[in-house]
Image (cartoon, rainbow, N blue to C red):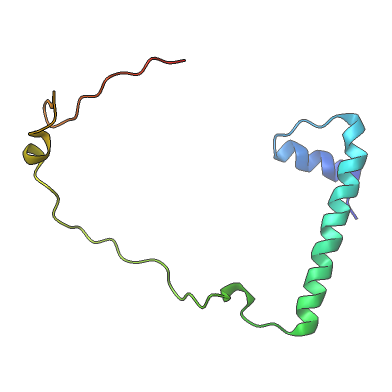
Length: 96
């Protein structure tokens, strides 16, 4: 069961401002969320579902970083108007 004090502690950790009149509603909402999560956990345990986290059978979506040759800086800047010291010069935008 979630208490009023726990809701205030969570709000403080999340750096949220909570009005006094919202605390009861938030407490009720958090209890409902936890009850829902408990229901899901119960269903999953009853069904004995295995490997639920890997429903797409992706083993390793990452790959090693490989250093590849890049374009020559001078070749890139040759057609750039105002290329200077290896950089593209761009116009400054006015802040709104």
